[in-house]
Length: 132
Image 1: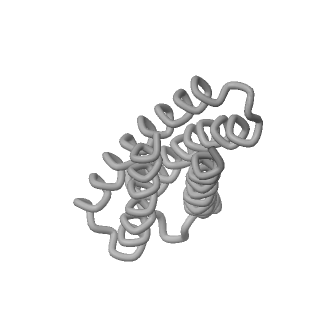
Image 2: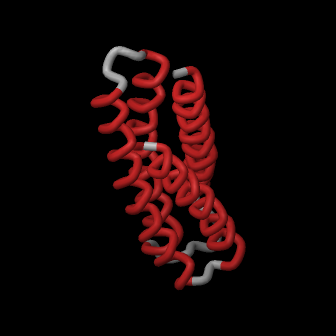
């Protein structure tokens, strides 16, 4: 469980770095890496949620953050698709649309919240293991 949590946190941290690089450079190779890494995070978050639900079924202090992690990951993917559509797929207008600003800003904010959630859950699991 611990290696999976640490890998998920590492993927999520690297995703924030890739996202910031993409936002400030616009490099298309970074965009592909950002998308692929997003799918790794989706898979790992699902695995973390499934393992927490299986191993710590009655522990609300672990189950609630794990379910929140799964929900947040799906929400992040949805806003990531919206950000992709408005920044890369649609033709650039003279003035940036408010929808583009909304999707990109919410996507960036949810990414930080996703990192905080996986860090919180990792610390809770490590604390639980230290108490035993």
